[in-house]
Structures are given as structure tokens and as C-alpha cells.
Image (cartoon, rainbow over all chains, first blue to last red; front, side, top):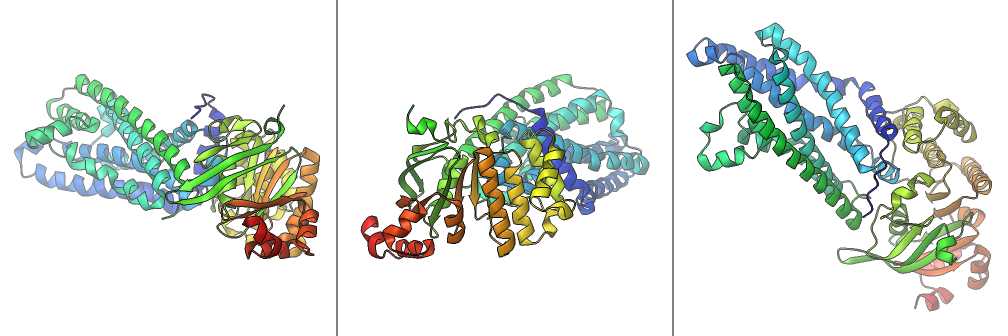
Length: 269
Length: 253
């Protein structure tokens, strides 16, 4: 298969514009971006407030729960923002137009990455501000550490988003459920709400193979011990490089398989 | 220079098999630049598979497809900006207005002065009144006209049309056919037209390729086909072939 190296920011901008037109034309879509992160943040925030009043440890570990919720939402919503933009093409029966256009797969992926950032910003910025107002938890106060957490979580979310997009191309909308649920497989394994040491030893090996585990451990270190563990972030970055590359390779292979099996023409169930 | 190199589309011993079904069974044809060719056949004849392979959406099981000299789908990015297609099996995003959709596709095809091109197509295809209407709120006929406009955005040298006048009233359909004819003459475009409207094929195409069960069962000018089958309309020829009557029976066997 010939791989074209000619990359056009103009085509990427065209795709971002297409998704932006869609987003701004539909208030339920915008509301949906904020709704669940806000519900999650409020529920876990109030739970944490209750526990803080009844357990000494959590007084010390102020913000761990709500920080976990917000970082988990960055991971989950990042992937969802990517996957939903892709799904919109399938719902609209527009994938044939896109695949037949000069748009390169890399440009398509980059436009989906940009849209995941835009969707995340629309959803998460108001929610992080609400967290300050309701619970006095300032995610932005994590400073540079937040940048490291964010970068690693987004890389994981895109890697999984790319893999899911490939599966959707190959299997049609029958694989849609994966877009909504794939990330929940990681929820218990990457130790969002508890330390890795809670897991059985054999499961700890799996947990440490997942980049988000390092982010959530790093966040607990920061909030509980006030220590930024750069080593954890670098290990997460290395794992993310592998995961992202694997996602891109899988996408290419699944796209090739879709061309062989004719599933680009039949993107229904 | 051989015919495959000179031709705009060259299909050589194309076979496409899905799991246990062979949809296209070793067909070959080539289309010279500036020609309009009809691809006819009943349901399951292999027309859509053939067109999808020419567009680069499918990888052949064996055989080759070359478009403007590029091997499809391996070298598709060399030529996709010089091609376009229209099909009732794909839609444009429904919430976007016609103008927004055309703008997005214009940018994907790197059309210079996209606003001017949209304006021109809106005038040519009578889209002015619906340009700022969401695509999902158009009638079937309006959608077809927008789809034709999208297919002409980049002034394609190769145009693949699948039922371009489906859902149009006879007057509008005739008008769209006239526009396509003028476009092809003005741009020396190569057109492959899949249609069940025999009168349309008879009017637009100088050559007709008849397919049945994945094979080409006849390939000639409309006039020659009519003469050979002793029929007055292409529809009767189509029915002869589809039902395996007379000369068609001998050719298929």
C-alpha cells in the first residue's frame, strides 16, 4: 500500500470546520459535553466532603476523589470526543464521501484529535470552575503537573480512539458499543480511585502496563505527599508512545482490511 | 503507448470476492478520456462493486484497476483530487447547510475560490434558494441536485455517477442531464454512469456495458445494441439480457 507523505493542514482545517458546524448547530450536543462531567464531579465531590468529615486519612488526602474524577473524565471524554466525531460520519452516511476524497488517514485522525480537544475544553473547563466554587478544589492549581497528567491522559485517549475508529471501519456500527465502553475496561485496572497496591500482585503487572495508572498514582503522590513524580510521567510517556503507535498501525491494518472486505461501503449494523 | 496507459479508466481482469461470493468475475474494459459510458445490470450484477473498486474503496481480489494512470487503491492519492462521484448510497451531514457542506468538500478537494465555485454551481443547478438550508431538510430531488453539485465541485476529470437523476421529476432530471452533458463536453471529462433509467443512458452514453452476475455480457454503442437485439429501446435489451432471452442467452452461455 502506497503511503502518501503529502500532509495538508488545509484539509485538516476543513474537517475541523465540518465538526464545528455540526457542534454549534446543536445545543443538545453541547449540553451533553458538560452534563455528565458535572454530574460526576458533584456526586464524587459531595461523597468526598462526607468522608472528610468522618475519616482522618481523607482529611489529609483532600481533593483525591474529586481530582480522580476530573482526571478520569479527561481520559474518558478525550476518547469519547474523538470517537463521537468519527461516529457522526457513520450516522450521517458521509464516510463514503470522506474516504473517496483526497483526505489522508493521518489528516482525518488529526482533525479528530483537534475535535476531541475542543469538545473536552467545552465540557471540562466549566466543570473545573464549578469544582472550585462547590468544593474549593482547584485542578488548575496543580500547575505544570496538570500539564503532564493531561498530556499523558490525552495520548492514551487518542490511542484508544484511533483503535476504536479502525474497528468501526472494519465492523461498521455493530462495533459502536466499543466507542462507549472500551475505556471502562481500564477504569478498574488503571486504579483511578485507589492505589495500585490494593490490587493482587499479578494484576499490578497489568496495571503498570497502562499509562493512565502512572498518572493517577502521580496525582495521589502530589495531593497526599505534595511530591511531583516526574519519573512516573516519563514512564507513562514511553508507554503512550508505544500505545499510540500501536493504535495507528492497527488503524492502518483495519482500514486495509475494510477495503478488502467491502465494509467501507456497508457501515451499517 | 498502450490503451491502458492512454485510457482514463482501465479495468483488467478484475475479480472481487467477498467471503464465499464472487461479485465480479474477471471483467475487463477501458474508457477513453472524454467519453460517457453506461454501466447497466440488475441488482447483484456487480456494478456497485466495480464502481467502488474504481473509486479505491475496495481492493481487488485479483486483477487491476487504473484511473488516470494510477493503480487503485494503492496509488489513489495521486488521483483522488482529479475524480469525484455521486451516489444515492451516501449522504452529506444533515445538520450542515448546503453551503457549509459544499465549503467543507471544496476545501477537502482544494478548490480555489470555493465561494465563487459554490456560487457558480448554485446558479447552474438552481441551488440558490436552498444554499443556507440544512441538508437534512431538503426534498429527495434537492438532495440529488446538491449531490451532483458536490460531485462537480473540483471540476473532476473522472466522474462516477450512480443514479444521478433518481428522485428528480422528469423536467429537473432532463435539466440535470443537460448540465452533465455540457460539463463533460466542456471539461473533456470521462463519465461512468450506473443507472436503471434506460432512456437516460441512451441519451447520455455513447457506450453501454451490460453486466450480469459479475460478468460483462455485452458492450457496445446503444445503437448497435438495439440493432443486435432487434429492439427499439434499451429497456427491452436490458430485459432480454436480464431474463436470458434470444441473443442474450447465447452470449451469456
